[in-house]
Image 1 (cartoon, one colour):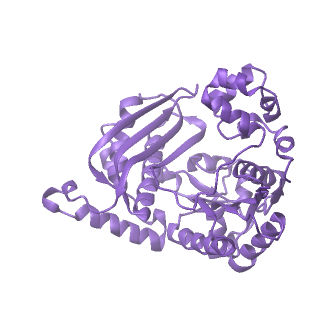
Image 2 (cartoon, one colour; image 1 turned 30 degrees about the horizontal axis):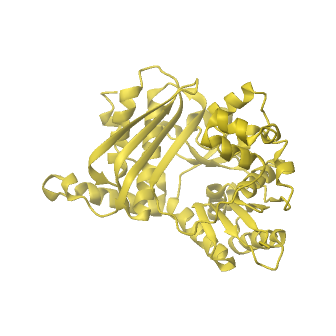
Image 3 (tube, rainbow, N blue to C red; image 1 turned 90 degrees about the vertical axis):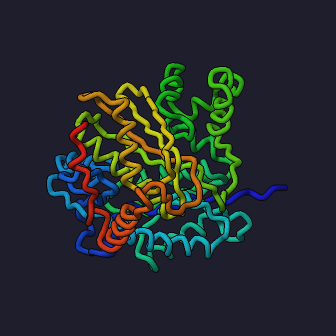
Length: 395
């Protein structure tokens, strides 16, 4: 008889903000956001729970965040500090089990199948350890598979009504997966985006329970192979293993604006923010990219993509940004409203300087990028900015 799986979804609560509170305890309990100042056309990278009470959230333009919360404190990003703290957290996870799937800097799945301690007990113990030894709050979802554990964590955090970190643990006992899912809105389910949700709503399907009552044959007829996946997921069935090693196929960053944006400066600044994130991740993983893609969504959810192949592979923020902006200008027309912007890099290869990028082997841009990274690692992401303002005249 197969063992019942014990899967934990681990997520640090408002991670960037939590690290900033450790660096500056006077921030605790205050409404603050991590990110660029409004005049730098930046967005909110993370915000405290006190700020969220005003409607501020991640990926929101900082100018809008200030309008919602005029006394909002803005703290520049200190990416080096976040990576260091993340590494310390991950050491604790690997001390529990080698079966850790790191999803992002502050999120992971753990497979504790076979451990004699209850899954809930493991989660509570891990939560206490991270809090007592690192001073960081985390929340966990506990279930028999990754899908249910992740959604359980989301639900657990939402159930905590507080201006402080949720510090939640939500357990879905084996055999109760479908019952747990039944009342949840359909958009909570993996694989249900806006268009799929709209089609399901037209069929009267608004909760996961409604979806679970549809036959697999009907779903396959309406949605093809994706319908079979939806049928399994709606019943809480997910057999995906923990992926301890994941080959990076692409790196992508995207932002969905809380309010449709038509101002070029905000859109331009967002493209730079996304490009910087991609460049940083590529350099951390020792990769370069040859293909860039832009994702552009209108308010009516119509989505357009553009893609280009670079003449030389790169991992540099500004090269990524310049080409992403070139793709953007192929789509956007002045005054058009934008709901979502996304940039992705693919056709990845192991890194290394691409000498043909520079005239006669000039490494000045590489040296500049290295200098920028070093300064940001020490003084924060906003301590130095790319001088792109002089290049906006052709917008």
